[in-house]
Length: 93
Image: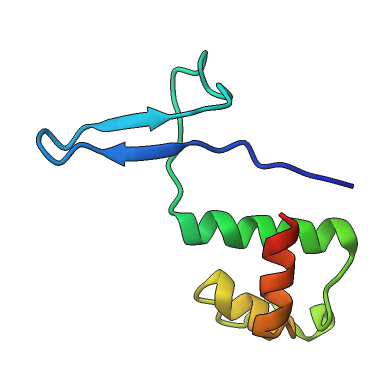
């Protein structure tokens, strides 16, 4: 199953600090409010969603509720992914 997170780019104007929405697919042309998420978090979310949809977690049962997970990168490492596997998943997205 293919899942797509609709996204656009927010570009900060260096002069007045305002943001320009770059939305080539027009996902958000009628939206009044949007939420900004940094690129690393968005990529991490896509990887996690892809793994959930593919039931592809290697060490899911080893993650405990009280584990300190400070970032998506940390979570992927705890789930047993290696750098090469993350690169492969990113290429599929």
